[in-house]
Image (cartoon, rainbow, N blue to C red; front, side, top):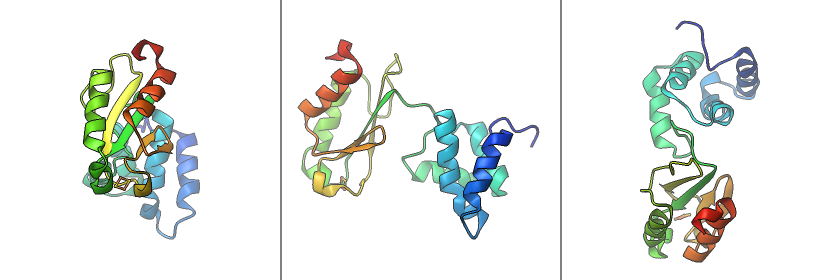
Length: 163
Ligand code: FES
């Protein structure tokens, strides 16, 4: 690989510090990917290649982690990232309907970001917060039980034009 653009000396130093906490370097793949995403807002294809290079694993290894874990994404998310769980407990308590309500309110399909970059809407699998079903995550915060009204209120806080 030529000159790495993602792993700057500073980022590499931080990644090395993370890896030092694990007996095997590649066991630190998830936290290092998280570091890359926090630094750049997403993990681009170039970043995937550099991560693979850093861990000396095939690029497909990183791709598999990207597709398995919904917490990683290849394009930056909106300022307000709404993630709604649609696994059994949440599905039984109306998650699919909530997702449809949010699609209508935001004018986007699930999995998309509004044109102004304010909102992203995604469904996720069980967040381990089933007792709060229907549960979700607003940026880094768990939320639930969610209702249409609570979500509208959150949207209003981020963007009064959608109130
Ligand atoms: S099923 Fe939704 S949080 Fe577990």
